[in-house]
Length: 391
Image 1 (tube, rainbow, N blue to C red):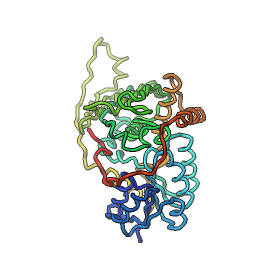
Image 2: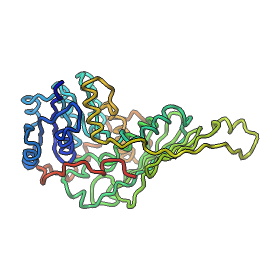
Image 3: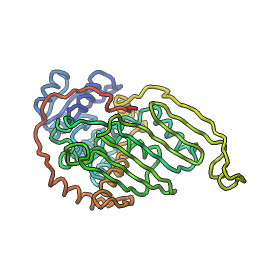
Image 4: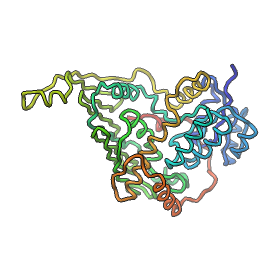
């Protein structure tokens, strides 16, 4: 069977890394045949690095003339929905970078387009390939932790300098990026959080704008959530703390899980705590506990793993590890957090009011300092550990 002909739209750092992965033959059954970017310098770099790939400055021209079978969309966040929808409509299997878009309403339209197209639609949630998070999900979703009581994720090791934010005119602006740490760095964690624990019913948030940097969006955020069964959650993230922390704790009626420093610690109760609470004749009953430490049972396949999973789904129909339609869940959480902040840190019930969110986001984008300009400089084009799970 011939390789799937794949194109990458947007060859900045992330898109070039995907292109390099394809060109190096690291994705089984899929080959790089075209790249696209509006920046001349980036296309010149691709001519040197991927000489056999066709080059386009217009993504619509690429779809019309090159007619790829699959497309990886790695353009700025606000363009994800528009370009990915067009790729699907053109009959291309499509993988979009995270986040799926910046506004839930646009993400929902993209998901409808994917359903109507009948094409494979994936999203680059590469941290789903981490063995510890996959095992954690099996335990929680399989009921081994009992009924969830509380979940807390402190994920503050996304440290960034002012130089990072100044390196691109689009960075950390409402008009160019559409948000801050919740939209750029933390989507992976928000996705894993809901993938493991499920979606809450409400979100209350405190999104602090420019707390540590000279930017117009949030560089620290705290989300407080409530779930259908009454369980609560807290999600704390920042780009202004050093050293940072990456600690996920999930408490249930049958025990507790803690993921930190590349290890999952599991306390298993011999009896469901809810039963002991009401049946015990003691004031301070002690429940026997089994303790286990679980290490990763394999490497984190990361971006190449998601690309290979995408190729496999196209070739064999195997279900995706990260279906594109699931991108709406983490975006719902960040959109709800922003809406909560904009309305005075109120509790926002889910599903949220997308029309209200769109209006308030547009107001901020209209006042943004972002001025579109062609990207300068050649991208690194290599996968970096800053895009993988870091403990």
